[in-house]
Length: 222
Length: 341
Image (tube, rainbow over all chains, first blue to last red; front, top):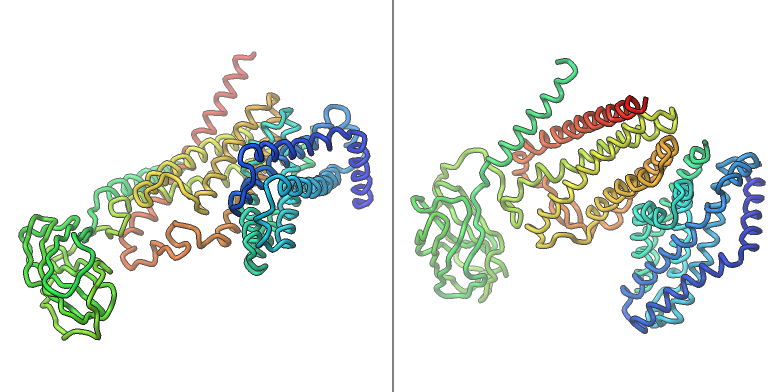
């Protein structure tokens, strides 16, 4: 039952987003213009720590930007309508899953644009599959931990500003772990060292999803 | 009396902590020597110390290298805390670093480990024993640790701040759960009071920590697991207050704030538990990454006598402040309703 409801909600999300193509365009534009601004400022970056840090800063704020929208649609009557159709827990789980997929795509796009402009010299000595894995896990992690925050910010009726303020302390631990992991992967360090960061990342993800599933129904109770 | 005995206890504990913690002298220690390498032949150097009374003291001095001793040929008392020591360094000391020892009747045995880089090394020298007398030293004092020195007293203020913050924070999370369960505005005010008091302790923890870092590590802020944790904690509190400020409707504000506080603090707890284990090597704090923890020192019992009461005292103070703040918020609410009608 729950799985069927989640699949339906996922399809609903996808259809709504397909109708609002400008949403995808704005996300891509945000990433590309940020990357291009960095390119104008520093041209190519050859040092691993700087390259890595700048990439995560761009991806972090792209995530805030992309996820901040995710509950803006449910203002007023639509939320009530959705409430009568589905259990709030399934709503938040579907939205989280959908956001994770969006962030997966967005991290791929960001990484592509970033290497295109800022240079791929640092990738020469890198463990590429491991680096790709940490970027993917990082993007998904942002989505999982920020979905509930986006819902809170939307219910509070404020825009992206509040979302960033509420979300930053939440993603900070995740950001620390994933930045460390991706830097080690870029340095070509073995899986045995990087692994523990990724495992802790997954632990934070599980906690975030569990808490969202528990707390979200209270958010929708009026 | 039955209800507020713990307030008296907390006040007494903090009074004890402030008086004993700030009044107890540091143990005498050697803090500086005018040269840091020795070569075979006659050498003469000045040793500076802290909390000693050398002027009318019976003194012996020697350097020790791989438990072999070179005795001082002359010790000149420059002042209560300065000596000029002369000695003849033989060729053949075994190890790279030599320790400096001063024995004083007033101050006991003073040691500066690895004080001198040793040149002209060989396979050992003739064993000699520089005569050692009996120390008259006794009394309660704190250890004088390298780089900590007098700032060691901050242990009774900086560390308990975080314990008090975590205690008050737990009260806040519990009250937030009650808000969601009971939908009560009184519980919401209690959660707000806990956050306000917790934020105060967090800020004091940051200030005392920052000052301590300036004295010992020569920086106001640095990359460190515990510092990251502290920053996240204070940021969560501030975000909580911003969230409350941006919602006008009281019932909705109570619910949103409760949800955020449960989410954020559970996350933070995992952050405290998981990340230190990952980055343990990076921490400058005692007990992490090769830094000796306070309790590995045998001298620590003297600090513990004040540290444990300090923790208990500050936690009690935190709970008391939370109760006062909650009562004040309730009264303000009451007053607002009264003037409405």
